[in-house]
Amino acid sequence: MSAQLIYDLVPLGSIVNYSDGSPRPPERHRKKLAAWENRNCGGRLIRKQAEARVGNTTLPASITLHKGDYGSPGTIVLRVHQSFSVNSDLKFSVKERPAIGTDLVFNRAGHDAELVHLAANRTAAEEWLTRHGYPNAVLQQVTADTVAADTVEGRAA
Image (cartoon, rainbow, N blue to C red; front, side):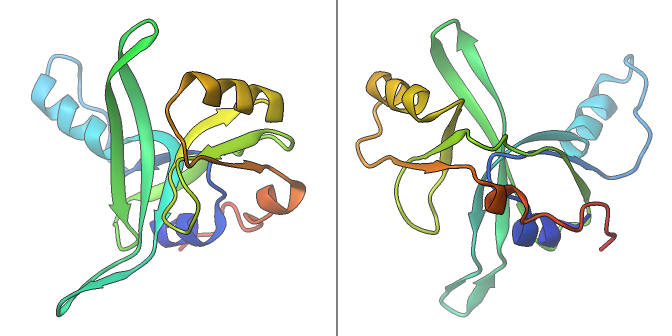
């Protein structure tokens, strides 16, 4: 599946893997392994950004994956995101979609909103918001229509 199909069809909150198709190098080749892991990994789809014009330049649409959080228990020191243009040469696949009935917590309203948390239900989402500073947060429940958006999984691009 291409990055464009991920952008067009896959709901936010899904776990997405990506790969360049190359074999994993041996553990002893640390630099090659680090470069390979940068092009062969995955994360949670947290943002879809539309195409934008900046002066005479057109920036293509993009997707952003949340790859992980680092820090001590209860304190996040570093949050790792990676963005991909819809023109990326990598191959993407959907590993998991958000379950029906879960609630997506966005940092703000609008098309450029970013998913900041995936809660089991509305009560859990509201409780999470009391502990985290998102005053403009928007909650959206995952429905069958949301998850059914990806009806062509496995279709090659």
